[in-house]
Figure 1 (cartoon, rainbow, N blue to C red):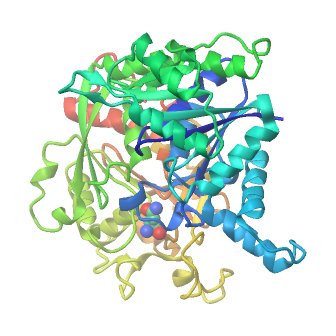
Figure 2: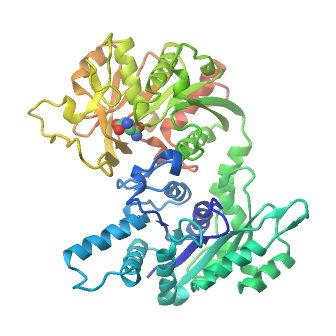
Figure 3: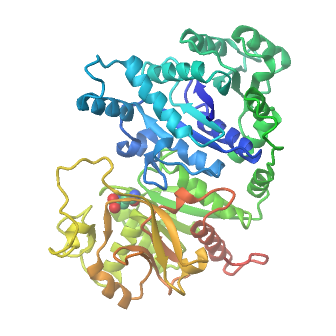
Length: 552
Ligand code: GLN
């Protein structure tokens, strides 16, 4: 049986529950424990797959094809355990399971209620997701006091009783510093804990988000009002340099010991070893070079819409200590002839996206990169746009497009498989009315890399597994004409039916992939495509391979 750490938040949202949970898990993992993390989200969407990145940030995709909350990205960047379908669960998922059971008659005529039917479903989920681990950290989305999160809180209260000493509750709160009064205020924390206790949950640990270190007297005061021992009232300061500093910061506060001692695991664990994290932070702070990469996209204003992408770009600079500045450009602003905003950048990236708006701006930016020898990395929609650009401007296929933006195009160089497959093809015609949720090519799939290609050199092996999230594909009828014009199809699906990577050998660095490499990049390992791309940006900027930089 796994021990469970429930992570809740109070006072305000955005306290960084996910990051704190992930960083704590990283310390525990370094002590030799097998740790997993689970995110329980109170909203009614069955999964975040249909939610706009403007509202909810990016949709993170796991290896087994779950479309999940972006916190799972933090989890995978901090721990070695891989996330999957069981690591993210929403109210919508719980209710749809309960309703399916009710329709099947599983409840034998009982009146189906929040307690016990919904809460039992939640408890079952948590127990299944934590099986096989020493510790499972269970993060509850939202803030204590929200109506929507009540069934989850009731379920974890019950689990707390059932698991006894094998369950702990960690609550994050805000301790604001009032500049005018020159003091911190503990009242919101007191109220938040009171709210939690009113539903039967007594926290074991308080993680107090604060701008300044709390004094012993202040921690004593919080302890007194909340029944939490002073040593378990912990200051969680903002990470100044890097989020990858958080494991060390929490370790310095003794947070991992509280968990290990709380569960009586002292004999089972070793010392924490945070060397990897110190190294990552050192490489983040002590940089030797600086480059600027333009992201040309649609959701550039929303901070979290490209979370994994911006992380992966930063990881890409770590190997050679390159600080990477990101210039976010709205693709709609690049629709005309004025591409001056691209002049001062060292590399251009077009990320994944959906829909027609701004597509031509992406095509323009890619043409600029291709014609001027600027390193280009295209991801998913960014590969499809590169294919469209090449079709029109190199292959001379006038009006070529993806059917996503122009269903009537004379050259469907990108389309739904059913749109370009022969009538005899084996794929069934897509139902126009079909659901939008869960209907994409999703999750990790293998890809074979062509000998002698840039992709093969970067990865250093023949077969790789990368994660997908898209409906449209490169139209195989155009393979020949693209290859004749100099494009290399350097990655194909294992059965060779789908084009996964394209590149231009005549260009200093031009590569685009149908999958999302940002989901498998981590600070400790980076990702070969991002590392290669950022290093190419540096070489482009310097006009040569800088001294001490071994070219990847
Ligand atoms: N809209 C494109 C498709 O569905 C690309 C999706 C993406 O970039 N993730 O194929």
